[in-house]
Amino acid sequence: MFEKILIANRGEIALRIHRACKEMGISTVAVHSTADADAMHVRLADESVCIGPAPAKDSYLNIPAIVSAATITGADAVHPGYGFLSEEASFASILEEHGFTFIGPTAEHIELMGDKVAAKQAVENNGVPVVPGSRGAIESASEARSIAGDIGYPVLIKAAGGGGGRGMQIVQSADEVEDAYRMARTEAKASFRNDTVYMEKFLEKPRHIEVQVFADGQGGAVHLGERDCSLQRRHQKVLEEARSPALTNASREKIGKIASDAVRRIGYRNAGTIEFLYENGEFYFIEMNTRLQVEHPVTEMITGIDMVREQIRVAAGSPLSFEQSDITFEGHAIECRITAEHPETFAPSPGLITDYHPPGGISVRVDSGLYAGYSIPPHYDSLVAKLIVHGASRNECLMRLRRSLEEFVIGGIDTTIPLHAKIIDNLDFVNGDYDIHWLERFVAEDLVDN
Ligand code: ADP
Image (cartoon, rainbow, N blue to C red):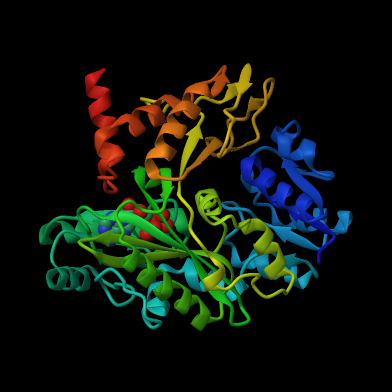
């Protein structure tokens, strides 16, 4: 087992990884930008190294600085968290070349799944249902028009290298294809340095349902059930729950098996998430994420499995510590992503935290690096806390979440706590009756009401 792990991330996820390491008796090294010198992940780690100035490209994305930090501190392995370098194949291979273990999949699997066109083909060849669309990249506007004619409008033109919900164009009719195709390529090139685009049928009212998989690259592969992440704003997840209120036991078992069989067949190692859109009882693969997800705690709450611990074990060469039959699902869990933003206008609100009182009590978990006196720097993602609540039933979970949101005090800045309180009081949400467009409508109507 590793003796020392460098955590190549910041914020709540750096803390999350630190906690798993300490519980395994492993020392931690934090890295940080100059803007994060006072951050909680730096305060708690056994050692810390400043890797550059505030902009992420000069610090958290600075591979030579991170490799140097691992070298001077004598770390054995590097955990990338999510975001930043977590899905950068070259980071994984450079670390391995320097003798450090990358706590994640092989560089080849990161690369395969990072190219959405190749990923779609690879999973389809291994029995996973995909969204109807182009077979591979589209090379011209006329090809785009012909494929769209076959699958039927509306269609979506998507960037092969896309991520973070960016690089997608909806096309309603044949006369829009030419412009949309050109815009999609230009945008893809500017944002992802790759102008390859492909086409999918635009599903009108799907849910976003993802399956958590775990594999050891030695033949062991399981699924840890699904998460429903349909509540999104600008294609970004806002609130997630496990299990999905939309699935029957038969359908969740079926898709779970399809997902775990696929990762076993491709020889995958690490935690992974296979994301689907779900409409009219059918699943359609959209992408695979080859890292820990922001929303992994809802899965931990219903399975009792520490996923970061398991990632570390598997990266150290151990086989999975459980088989499918060992995994049981208890009750219901919901995560609210709390961001430093105005709850109605979403204007960013970094700055000094004057008061901080997280909720507590049975089955309540808060993953956050906040403390009173801390100043949130303006340079990074606006996520500042995750509130995760478990209940024996979805209803118990909702009651507990409601009182937890009431208890939560984050003073000095605007946060989205009031938005979450409104969402969970809405009858559609209480009934589990929502799709991926529900939250955008809810936010727009709420603005009109005020
Ligand atoms: P990214 O990697 O940028 O997150 P995804 O392919 O995972 O891109 O898609 C992000 C979100 O965009 C999905 O959760 C869904 O809301 C929407 N989306 C993607 N593909 C489709 C589609 N074919 N039809 C309708 N919505 C889609």
